[in-house]
Length: 376
Image 1 (cartoon, rainbow, N blue to C red):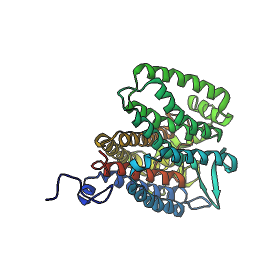
Image 2: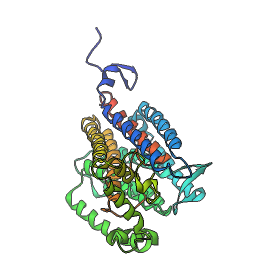
Image 3: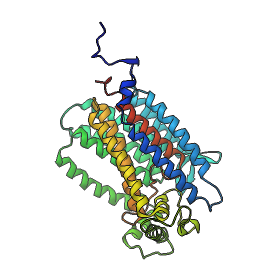
Image 4: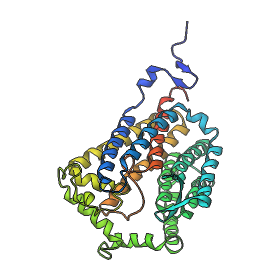
């Protein structure tokens, strides 16, 4: 008689329908719902621009969903065996863009492909997360030793340094939540946390004096004193606050926002898409979108909690921490609570590489949940 206690599979590493039914598909539903909201908002935000960005974003979303299911097919445990090679390829792509990339928005972080662009740093986050999860899982102790923490920081520091050289501090900043989340779960003594905070202050001072460009410093100074340059660096923040405030409770209506439709709000289809959403749909629309984000993060946290192996837990935590920080920073930025940087909003902001990377993230996280009965 067949042993019914053993997990049944169609092929090795792929659970059957019973296991598929237990996967937290709410994560996927939230991602698709947010992408749909993003498509509608991008169409509204770009309706008065010379180029309609809606068809392009639609292509990215459809392609991203395809990549999501492709990522779902790959067993992350088997991928982790080649994590070092995958990580190296990610680093090579960052070096290549420094040598052969094109400059956009003051940063040399893009490969131009016709009228489209590819930003390798978005995909390097995924390769770095996989390699870091593999390394930290191999430590297998309650608290990490100092040497292990330094190595983990070095793993993240290499791509961060290359992204900083591209003059894209916003993208470089997004590697830090991933590192912090994975180190926290792997186990760090409080003394190291205090030392890391002090080191962050020193590094921040060094970046201010030696790495940040004048326009980046101007953004920080505008955050500290919004009225200092009302027609310069402070203009974007001022228009964003007007857009958010004018939405009030129920909003002005779809494609009825004055700040977006009359072109007062810069970067309205990318970094400031949340301000367009707030103006058109008001407080109620903002609450709905934030609830979708919270539901996504909650389901991701549940997947991490019930993962059966250390690599899976760390991978989900790292990816989820980066996602959550993107949401928190962008939404705080558009209302003036944090300095303006080029940090887009997941699934809502226009952007090919960013959209594809977000959907691949969903696939990797769901892949961990799908294989929790197999990778024991």
